[in-house]
Length: 357
Image (cartoon, rainbow, N blue to C red; front, side):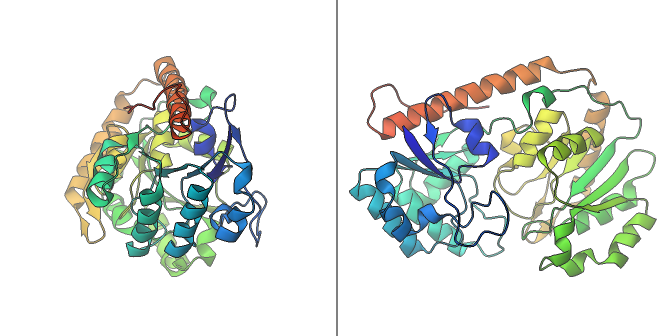
């Protein structure tokens, strides 16, 4: 079968689609290309573009990237697909869009897609319950497969007497707020752990660049924080980074799911996650109170302390069980995704079933 995915060239999509049974069509080149391999904004969600190409695909699967498409455009896309009997599958990664503060426009777009979808997928039970409550759609729950390469999953880790507690603030997108967390940790760290902050150098040109001004970063350095500003990690650099840290705090004020949680699980890094969204349902993790207008500072230190202790207690040897489990999980998710596609196309091979991690 020929499947168009929005996007196609993304690690998650490659993980859940079985290339032996599905031909994944390449991402169309956007109107304005700023970098090699760019897929956004997706042309397949432009009605005029899709209308002339819908005959060449069996199914359209939307994951994310529909931020620039109006609800009217998305409704027209759904009409074009329906007229040609091409099923629409929607995987809800983000009930809250991490790139925006206001969520009403994202919710409206998502509502249009969910109303038209032949099938809905999400990553956790909590997200599925919210989807049913808000939009009346039942979602198949398929866990996020592994992010790191197979040979990096469960790899041997260095034993450190002072574990490294890290926060990666990326380029300070809308849902990222590392500063209250850093301030609280900077007051606490010392003999128990070392503290590291990473920022993508893109932050220097981002709307919130003033928050990463040199005097602020220098203040953290004087407090003993290992501050690093660098280009965004490549896949190999991300794997290396996760061998250099022991605990990773996700500094999210809002959101739903995170590939970083999965990467940490693969690498044996102890993730500490906020209680907003469903990060804690991806894997059992230390949780702290953090939202758009709240921060449980004492609970945060308790969560980090628990993660540091877990890092100390964890084996540093190769974890073959973790590796085997993640490989088998990906196989199951691919099988369920294929069954979902076949059901949407009216194939009698079988129905996708709900899975749990």
